[in-house]
Length: 305
Image (cartoon, rainbow, N blue to C red; front, top):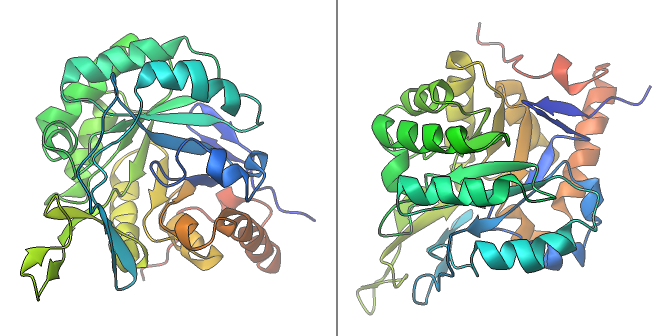
């Protein structure tokens, strides 16, 4: 019997649990040269702001052991360009589109949500309250209960779309932030975003990134991400998208066993754009070999005693 890989992610039904992470495949055009986007559970597009943003000055990326630092700074062409040019292309592909939105103020988040609420082809909104690479907004909201509550509630008031809140790992207690988001109207949580990091050129004695610090992603952060997903799954009753260093089926399965309903592939796409397909196949093979009919039978089954 072929296992059922479909998942219920709050109000969303996905054909499988594997999606892309925001900021790692742009708006899908480049990735579509490598894989059929309709094979994905969903695609999460690059962060969108009210107006165009040029991002941070270069250099903006630095490779690290088992990972990478980035300080792109939410470069994008703005929401009008997304609606007029990018979404029409994405609508040609049979894949749910989740739009990651970012703002400098609570009002900007709400305005973006309202603008996208009636737009054809948007399956859900992901609130970027955890980007560590911008001077205002971003992680400033995601590291305080008040900030995360205000943004989530403001967006919830103006849209009927499913609301996903992307949590920052750069906090003392991830469960406190998860509860704040869930209590303020989040339908789904995604975690984790990047860890704040830094690299130094020892000859020049200067930071490797022009922004000085950046977000650390890749396999190096996976154990932290799995731990946080497990902690959050114990304390909130909303579905979780797990992400952080997933490059193989085994990595994705760790998150699902820890309590995630779905997973997102980010830095792994740079190494292998076909990674989502390998991971989908590998999850199916694992379920078959363990006599499991569906992912729901596996989710949250970690044995701690």
